[in-house]
Length: 550
Image 1 (cartoon, one colour):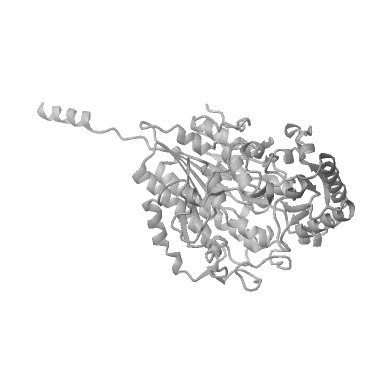
Image 2: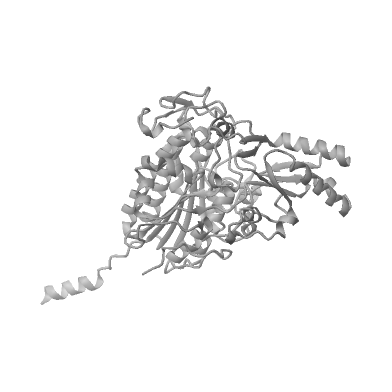
């Protein structure tokens, strides 16, 4: 009887085993175009392959932007809103008086980079005008149900775009070789980040050896132009290699940012994966939130895709490394949180255009590169001759022409109109430029996103005070760029806007393929629905099909 009483008392006071906390893990692969997934997916046998097999795969997902960019795409993913509403219309834009503004820039005193003595600038979500999914989750936090949101990347733009105002972003500092954040989010780096930086000891690294994910003769690398370096850049590699296997890269090629090579190689892929795993361990073992939203943005393909293009060995092999690293991350998250307590999402911020000279060599004759500096000069020369106005255009950023407002604003209204129309008339004579709108013409146009009007993509990105004075639409495979080599993603066409999107949760979301057209902005409200929290306040997009709870 006494023993029975002791057992009952023991059972009464024995704490119940707590339910494991929930994790929503969103993986963003920067510059991961759907056309890359199509041609490489049979070689993606790691985490990407797992999600494609076990998740809801949205075959027709688009980022509805006229000139897709990293900050624009990541912010659209996190807010579920269009750039015209969330305010991040480009990575960089010009405000009046010719001031260039970076999307994540802020005052050094308020948002200075942590653990840095050289950076005289700040980083925050200062220019983001609405809340994100991260903000909504943190706002729901209480002593009884603690919620946290963390965003990790090798670059500040993705991390801050995903974390929003109330989340916690961390990114890799290419100046110091360490992960960091800013004073806008915390007074000092947490101990787990400092420990990770110390353990990695990247300042002691002098070279990186790039080992291929597959044997060099594997079918995984049997593609046209994979070794075509005629129209590419070279970052960190003295001369273009015939094959990357065994290439040794010095990390001190850029004196101002000596660790950029880390960000552009498989070393960077593994680094962000290890950092994400360390973050998961910290939150499981010490912080123990009831719910955690973790964003992990892989930036390496974007850093390789710009100089080398999507057909290159660099971009293709990096995707294979990311695929294997995502498998590590999925396994680790499932082990620490329990596989039924993790919701996975995979998405991209934008696609990428083939290098135009390579597209032309393959038979698409209209493909061409238009150098932004040459375009500005030709416009200004024409306007000087026609209207006797000097230096009318100051910048061309992401297919937007910004006028020299110090002189433009002084003109009478009729001359302002005449100048704008004359620039429009002239640029439309340039081969490769299909349309040109003044800001007001595009703002008051009747293009409809829901009707499939591709021109609506440009209006989606339009914002007073940030957008250009004249917006250009190029023809397919035309690239307006500052670079004489490589490629970018500044058009509304399929190769730049069609992206992968997958949702996966064991025993909750049935594996299926959906061919209905959807937009990346639908992800945030859909995740909010699954997390049972309010959607980001500026998001008006419908939920993704196929996620209804039973």
